Image (cartoon, rainbow, N blue to C red):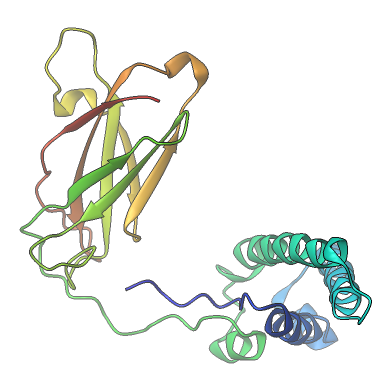
Amino acid sequence: MKAKDFIPQAFAKLLTWLTNFITYLNLPDVMMRLGLDMTRVSALSAEIDEYREACVKAGASNAGSVDRLDRREKAKSVTKSVRNFVNASLRYNEAVTDDDRKQLGLTIPDSTPTSDTEPLEYPEIEVDTSVLRRISCRFLNREHRISKPHHVHGTELRSGFIPDGEKPSLTHLVTSSFSTRSSITLDFTDEQRGKPVGFCARYENNTGAKGPFGPIVTVFVP
């Protein structure tokens, strides 16, 4: 099941969340204790203020489509900026406590240990080549009818180009990617378009134990 996003999407709820988030970050003791960069916090504050102004304009009785479009674009921009800030300054910051996360409106990590049962099955790969120079691999587990069994932490995807005339082999798949989500997307260059690329995947639990690789799927870079 997809985890609930900690940032709301509705414009009004987003503004309320952002206001609470930045107000807490701007508390002098919080900024000092977490070792935050005042310049970055100030830049984020300014962007949130711009979004607040856009919300006021879009909510006015004489608001037009341009005002509503501006609000939408600023919502996307400030949401991206907040995610970048969280990832760079908060997510792996050892000074951040669960109470800080609660006050900031962030997700509190689940402390429930994941089973260390070694994976015995493998994920099936569903490939999407509908976008130029991009291949998306979705991982399926038809036995459990979910993206991964409950004891699996994530999926390792091996990929690599297949030489002309050779049978796809694991030795060709020299690039490794890992995701705890149900898919991985890889980007390619114009020079790589039309080349055959192979994929295969296996599950991994929270202790690093790996399951067997599934069959190799081969497609051409779109």
